[in-house]
Length: 150
Length: 307
Image 1 (spheres, rainbow over the protein chains, first blue to last red):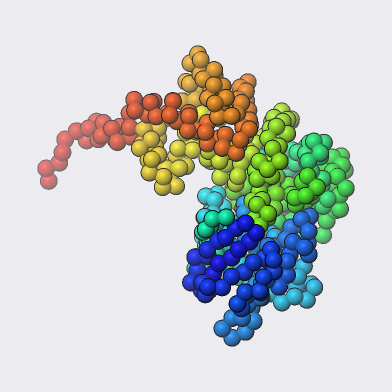
Image 2 (image 1 turned 60 degrees about the vertical axis):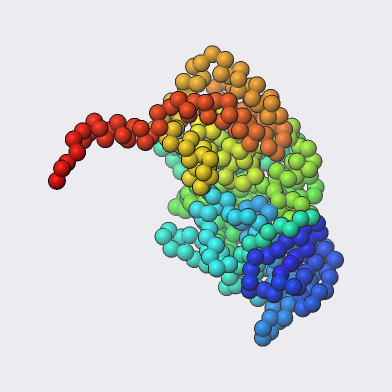
């Protein structure tokens, strides 16, 4: 899976998605089965914390609606932005059944004390146990990305 | 920007919270005075400021049109009185706009588990990767705001209650890794040396092989003592100033230390220069832990058992 976001072209190191399809958030480009259904920047402007894109694709059996945040700084920021947008979109009646965080590199060592990523899923450490991070019951998936140049 | 306080055992939890509130309000007020930030909303959370992490928002949300220090401080003071039994679960979130463009927030963290990761107070910008903003440092670099943020750091370092450390860094790892810092204030001037020693340990433990040998050399020595010895040597402070200058930064040393970078890589450059000119030559002459172990072995059990 390739994602092109403005100046970024990134390769997602995940085999759970086909590698040939493309999404462009900035131009709301429709490519293959993926559709960036909404340009979230124009919906929220720059003054409200929001996720980076809302996409629709056809999964194996049904339509999937995913909210995507690209982690820039801390993972906690990404979660907060995802959560705020999720609540707002749900209240407007939009379907969301997947939550993704795309991440360059790895977690900061300090944040790794609090979070763990296993099998593309985000977990929170609670004492000696781990708890999947969920927003309204939907688990947050983390996909590692490698920048392919600008 | 990350701020950490030294929590004295003599202070009650309420007093500590009040100290943190004062710093939070002063930070937001200073940012507003500099024309950088405008607070719009204050929220109080329990356990975390993210629901997905088990955080719960208390119904105490306040709309703000800029921060009014006395009003906010008295609100926080009342908050502590009401929630006395769950004071160590409180998180205060102030959201607003930085430079009329970027969504930014300030946090007061009183939850011990979160405090260990993010420090006591933090100020950052929500990332917007498609527009090239990954955090506060990116905004500072793009708008060349080093001078303004450096003056804020030096001001925050001068107020009472005095924070232990103020770090302007890419992520919370800036507390442990000098190379990730742009600027910082330390209550104790020895911090500029001790944090370099700690960075070596941090990087070696993160698996960076080039620091593993150095770690063997420095690990038997106490960082504070090494720093004290260095500061006793005449000319050391001058050397620090020179190193900072060549890293596009400045250092001022009183009882405290103020390292102000004018470049995203200032901290890393300073760290590398300090390593090359002081730590590496020193490490060659220090007795390594393996040698100490061998000596101890010879002293404690000089005879090898045959059976």
